[in-house]
Image (tube, rainbow, N blue to C red; front, top):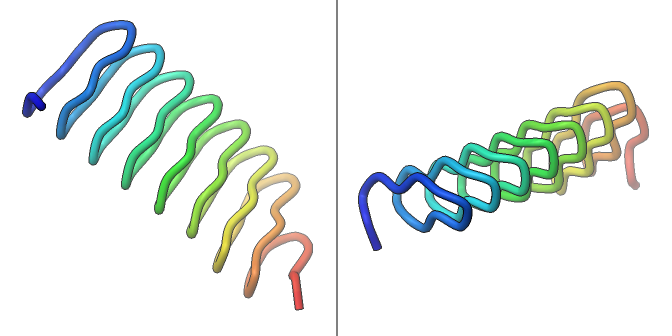
Length: 82
């Protein structure tokens, strides 16, 4: 695993690309601890469709917190899950 990876399917601590996987992932289908992209999945995720523990985006689903136009979160968000 590289520290900094760029490409179509980069894997690294910091990954930037179309399908990045890493601690910090920036790209369309980002997966990582901090994920930023159109479809972001991770602990902290930001994107149009974001899934994670803490998520922010147009349509976001978060285990604890979700924000955005339509957020579904455990404790905070547009619609709280009891």
